[in-house]
Image 1 (cartoon, protein in one colour):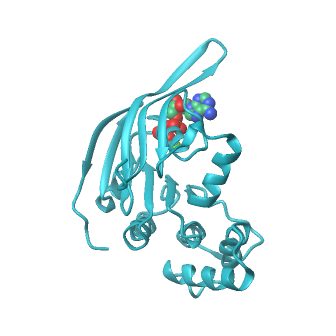
Image 2: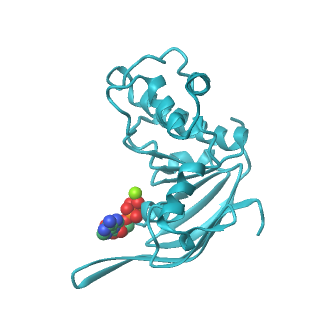
Length: 235
Ligand code: ADP
Ligand code: MG
């Protein structure tokens, strides 16, 4: 395989069935996503973006097709191995932040590090460093209630980046934010790709984010309509 392509999707189909009706949501998606780049999959609401992201990240088994991630045929693995693969390699960022209301910013970031087996002191240091990287060095002890939406999403990004994941998946990470905070968040995701070499895949319906992408894949009604690279802008 070409090592630059850390995610390869081959002829992915997916249908949701309920009772008599079947909704054919993904209709033969093939794509390649590169490491060290921010790739944005953009398309209108209902076009299948979240379904595709879930399939590429090992959360949802496709009806048909293959997903090769870091050289591994993901859906040929057992459930348990897929879970372990995600734990070892993947981080997720969602629209709704998913922070624990009782924990401080620092604690939110420490938690998954401890879960990944990082020792206390090292986890503390790593959490503080990562929060500083996203501009929250002064908010280490703040709880979600006292953080703005933009700050909350930056905590979620710090939490995602702290374990130095190979793959970062973001589903509409800016849609609960105003435009200025949306720009800050997408820039941080771009930096995660450029600086740490992570494969960053973001799905969104928001065309205002596209200026930050290295590669753009357009999806409509379950099919890719365009895929193109664009020149790196300064971050
Ligand atoms: P997007 O993220 O682009 O808005 P989704 O992937 O969420 O699109 O949804 C694509 C289509 O699949 C929609 O018609 C949606 O209603 C349907 N869908 C998504 N998830 C489910 C599910 N768990 N069960 C049934 N239908 C679903
Ligand atoms: Mg969605």
